[in-house]
Amino acid sequence: AASTSGTRDLAAGIADGVIHGGREDILKEWVSTFRQSVSQGGRDPRSVTVVSWVPCCVSRDSKAAKESVKPHIARSGWTSFTKMVSEGKPVAEEDRLAAERISREYDFSHHMSREHSHLVPDRWVDLFAAAGTPQQVKARIDQIIQSGVDVVSIVPYGDKESIMKLFAKKVIG
Image (cartoon, one colour):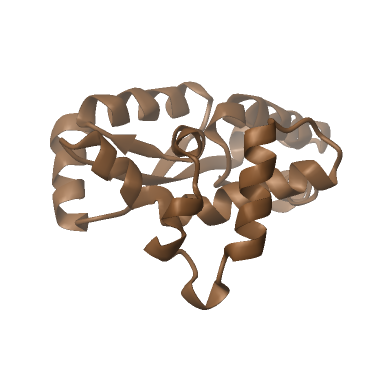
């Protein structure tokens, strides 16, 4: 996984593939920067596989699907926004406050459990996941593909068998 510029650049120099598991709203820029780093290292930018690793829940109930991915997003959002604040990058006040609250309240003995869901602002779901109705998830996956990744790897949340069937029939289908 290459979530920081340092690991991204290291991967660009030596890896056969890289996994991006962060904010999907900056994915296109991230992929472009990564491929430039690969090229600057004297390698063919397309020789390194870029994977987008995305929490996913597909359901006819959009709200329930979005709630299902929040345990994962609590950790992802906290990591992303806390790092941005520490680097002096601009962060929306809502995101800074949510990251600070997660820093105080996140219990690592219950890592990625539902007890952290209430800490996650709803808008973070769209930044870090593909969750909602089949149409919403298909639109999100299409955006991720348009960002230039080679592979989309979903991490299913909720009833995995049901999610995989809906994903296969309604999102890919």
